[in-house]
Structure formats: structure tokens, C-alpha cells
Amino acid sequence: MTPMTDQGTPREGRRLSTKEAAELLGVKPETVYAYVSRGQLGSSRGAGSRGSTFDPKEVEALARRNRREPAAPTTANELSVRTRITLIDKDRYYYRGVDAAQLALTHSYEEVAEWLWTGVLRPGIGFVAPKETVTTARRAVNALPEHSGPTDRLRVAAISAAAADPLRFDLSEEAVIGTARSLIPTLVAALPPVLPGHKDEGPLARRLWARLTGHKPDAASLHALDTALALLVDHDLAASTLAVRVAASARAHPYAAVSAGLGVLEGPLHGAASGLAHRMLLDVLDRGSATPVVADELRAGRRVPGLGHRLYPGEDPRAQALFGLLKEMPSAGPALAAARDVVATTARHTNLHANVDLALAVLSASSGMPAEAGETIFAVARTAGWIAHALEEYDERPLRMRPSGQYVGARPPQPMPSASD
Image (cartoon, rainbow, N blue to C red; front, side):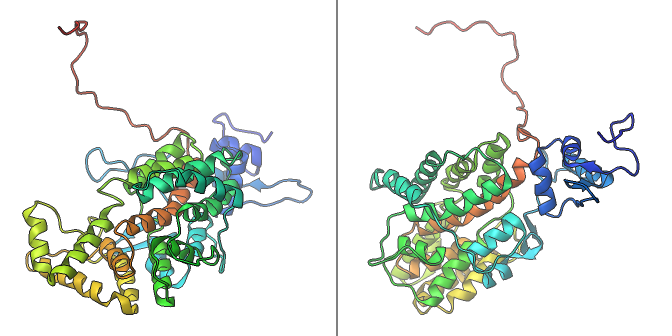
């Protein structure tokens, strides 16, 4: 054992073994190697050494960072979680420090997902679902009532895939990423196809397209869908992502963590927003003008769907990127004009810009997709981000996402309740 000082820190000039580094960090040895692979910790092999050794000062610095001294919240009772995945700053957002919109425009969804998980760009990578898992998931999804929504189907598919995986409790980085590479295509394959003659092969965007519309895609349409998936991979600590991190903090396996995210996503204030925008655009196209449609929304006391975002005072960069591609889709012309009409109409009274939900609505409305298609796209895309956050949380202290309640009820002691008449 490396000699230690009375304070439990290694003496000057001594390097730590993997076991010693793990003990100092309070993690498993596998996690130490995960830190190395992510560039958070350096390692070397000494002459005649059978294993890696680590600089004590570097390990101590990482241990201090991992203690997560509470950052000062911007508002009272606001939860703050340190992450290396996504930064949102000055109307831009970044995946691991790289401009996310530019990354999404130039790389496939699968490539962006890999970048988020590993910090390595792997051109041409594809995700393949095990046939047995797909069969199990499809059987479960097909048993649902016809009126089931897309998130119902995806959640059932995730649970079924988990039941088919006896190794789901392996939370090592390699195993979790392997699970992600098979789970995402399984979720897509479990959805019923609507495009006649479709073959389940090629990029994930092509496979998903066949589940969203019976219209045959052209290259511009597939590129728009693929880019939409990559743009939506992650967006910091959205409500569904926080749910995933809470589940991962309790060491729920990745299928269960994703299921937690899907449960929150189904709320009308999160994943369903693009569906509201889709229906609004169809109403504008039907009535020939955005003015009466916007007036109806405001008269009913509702916000106009697809406008504004609390994290972007200016324009949503995801909407900017996607609108640029939609201009290249001949079929998107009418829906794009309707969206511009909505923005121009509301601009008379408020300075709200189009957000990504409105851009998704243009994509779905102009491609013969149902209103729920945006929710499906969002859920499939965000699964990759949820896995990235689960990976981060598995490296943290277990059960740290456990806030204390502020009790405001009657103070004890209270008399025992009596039975009602």
C-alpha cells in the first residue's frame, strides 16, 4: 500500500495504484478507467508495472471536484447539478464544448449521440437492434389499445427491452453505452410502420421516417429529420432529464432511467408542445390566416404554441438550424408560410421568436405526419441525451439526488383522528 500521511493523503513522490485511486475517489476501479477515457484523469504505466498508476495530486483534485460543493443558486431553492454534457449560453448551445447546431447540421444523429456519450466522433457509426429484443418489444407494443400514444408505445418498448436483457444491471460505462446503441433502434423498430414496402435498414432517421408517415422521403426530408434528431439530443437539465438523473442516482438500470424520462416527457408542458403547434399550423392553413387562430388562442387564455423559450431571449438556435433545412423541402412551403404568419402576427404585440417546437411542427405538418409525430421525434432523440446524463450520474455518489422536504403541515403532537360518522 502506498504510504499515506496522517490526513489520509499520499506522500510526495508516490503514485497511486488503480485500487488506491478508486478508494480516494470513493468509486469503483472501473469508474477510474472511465475518468481516464473521458480525459478527466491521466494514467501511466511504470517500468515493470502490471497496472496503471496515477498522480496523487491529480486524483485529489478530481476528488475535490466530485465532492460537488454546492454552487450558489440563481434563485431560491433552485437545484444545480454540474455536468459536462451541454452548455446553453448567449442564445447558443454546445455539446461537450462544440456548437451543437453546427454539429447536428454536419453529422448524423448516431454520430452526435456517440460524441455525447464518449467524447469521440465516429463517422459512419450505425445502431443495430437485436432481433430477439425487437420481437419482444413489438409483441408488447402491438398488445396496446389502438388509441395509445407514441410515448405509451416507447415506454412499453423500453420496459420490454429491459425484460429481455439479463445484463441490464451492469452499470459500467461500456455496458451502458452498448445498451444505448441497441435500445434506441429497438424503440424505433417497435413502432408500427406506416410506409408501404419499407425495409428496416439504413440510418436511424430513415427507419423512423417509415413509422411517422406513408409519404416516401426525399434526401432533403431525411436530412431534415436526421438533423432534428441531432438538434434535440440534449438540452441541459430539462424536466425529463432531471427525472433520468434521479433514477440513475438510485442506480436504476439505463432502461429504467429512460422509462423515467419518457414518463415525464408525456406531460403537456414538455414533449407534447410540438403537437399543439402542428394543430395550430393546420388551422392557419385551413383558415387562410394566422390572425383569427392567434386570437382564438389568446382569447382562451393559452400561450401561442411554438413561440418563445425561457433559455433563449433571442432566437432558438435549434429552430434556426431546422428552418434553414425546411426551406430546401418543396413540400414544406405552405407550412413554412403559415409559421411565418404566426410569428409576424404575434410580433405586433410581443417580442417572441419561433422555437424548435414550431420548426418540428412545420416538418411534421408538411410531411403527412400526425400531430403526435413531433413527440415521437423528441422522445427518440432525447433518449441519447438521457443515457449521457445517466452515465454521468452513475459516476456520482449514490442517492445524492435526494432533497429534503420542507414540512408545512400541522406540528406534532396532534390528537389521534377519530372515525367519521
